[in-house]
Amino acid sequence: MISILIKLALTQITEAAGRDPALSEPRTDMYVCICHAVTDREIRAAVARGATRLEDLTMTLGVGAGCGCCRATAVALIEARLLQIEEPETSSIAA
Ligand code: FES
Image (cartoon, rainbow, N blue to C red; front, side, top):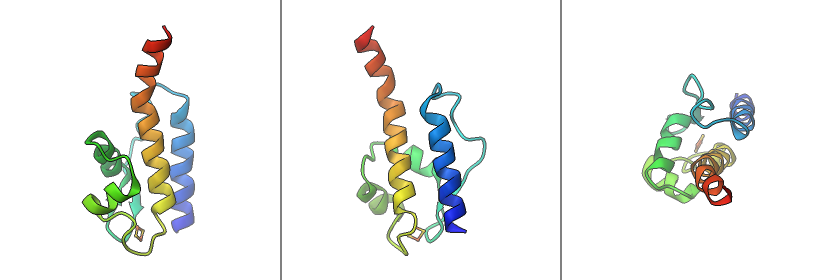
């Protein structure tokens, strides 16, 4: 079950990496942290509010504080989201 969720998250992240951020939002929520019932949408929202590290998600949402199976996926979501946020700034600097 966990490996399926991780595979789905990585597929979404991979697909999102090369697209317009507005078009790369998944259509449905996916539970990333089963222990604390935290979805990918909640993690993206936490990053939008300033979370940049797994520890930020652990303190605010409990992600990774249980079995730990979600940690790698949560970190990948943070990194993917931060890249989406940073991309427009990088483009404007290069232009
Ligand atoms: S799935 Fe996140 S701590 Fe267990």
